Amino acid sequence: MPRADAITVEGTLVQVLGAGLFRAELANGHRVVAHWARKNRQTVAGLRLGDKVRLEMSPFDMSKGRILA
Image (cartoon, rainbow, N blue to C red; front, top):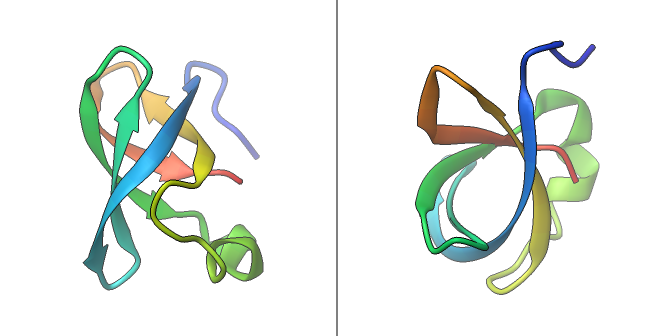
């Protein structure tokens, strides 16, 4: 269940960090570390560099996000 105060943004995967971590670049040029949501394991298994993804971020820590799709 998504959090009510979470911010959803779109980004592009620019680097694979391993162990389910990716570096994503947002439209404004900001880069964040993103991890995949457990419920989307099948979707995330096919991610490659350059793929567009939706990220859910907390308003309290804008340097990390969770990949939704």
